[in-house]
Length: 290
Ligand SMILES: Cc1cc2nc3c(=O)[nH]c(=O)nc-3n(C[C@H](O)[C@H](O)[C@H](O)COP(=O)(O)OP(=O)(O)OC[C@H]3O[C@@H](n4cnc5c(N)ncnc54)[C@H](O)[C@@H]3O)c2cc1C
Image (cartoon, rainbow, N blue to C red; front, side):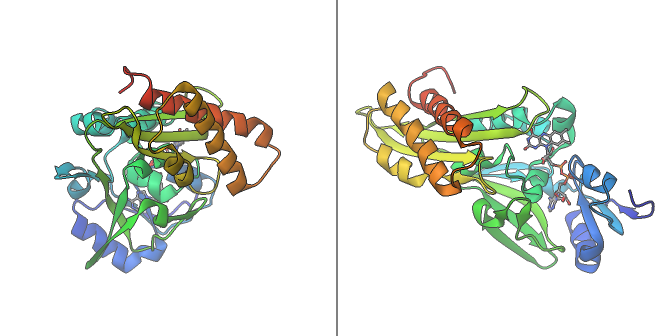
């Protein structure tokens, strides 16, 4: 680890953005530090300044407003999991956050850090994509809002500039009657990253046919993806077990077409199908899930 760096902990957003405007290119932002500390220890990062953003009051709020909720970027997973608005509005995201690392990791790790780190295996991405997540990015004197899938451009790669800070995430509330599910496969139950993760949201019409469905799969490609052609195929169908089984297989088939056949395909294809099927069952068949 580099032995000398300046440690700064601004007490408000204006002060923080001023520092980034002046010293952004030599600064590493530190939120919970769960990813940053690893890159500092392994000398991947050698910053001149560590900018601790954990105390910014402007980024520590959950604010419902009309059809959306704005979630502050520096709230920890544990704070969000315990938040009544998150529990009520975003059950799949809550469940995904509950899968992150261990309690110690969840007590300090943040959603903003997860987004900026841009890991293909990020647990929060599939459930946020179900809610059209838009990321609020600020720098001194300006603010831009970018859809999550546009911000993440590859594995550990995004469009953030050195002087920019993620200050919040805008998530859409679901239509009345919607249900959603998050499932993942990891090597162990805790302290393992997702090898495949899936979020599905759906709603039936009064006749019991699928009116709306969103399918988001992560960890299988550099960036998470919506499987929109399978979504379209499901609209208007009755969610019987046979339909759901076939949909799981179609989702897996589509992903293999997108990422190409690899050594792991033999294991991954049935695993994706099974995981997607489990989510679809939670959403459309299991009346006790959400
Ligand atoms: C043991 C272990 C287990 C883990 N398990 C999981 C897991 O199961 N699932 C999972 O998804 N992740 C997992 N992670 C990864 C990590 O915990 C998450 O990515 C976490 O959300 C990062 O948040 P943080 O606040 O700790 O970020 P930090 O480590 O502080 O920052 C991460 C990166 O984002 C930048 N950054 C942070 N906040 C902002 C911001 N607001 N604006 C701009 N840039 C910012 C930092 O400069 C850094 O590059 C694990 C990590 C560890 C060490």
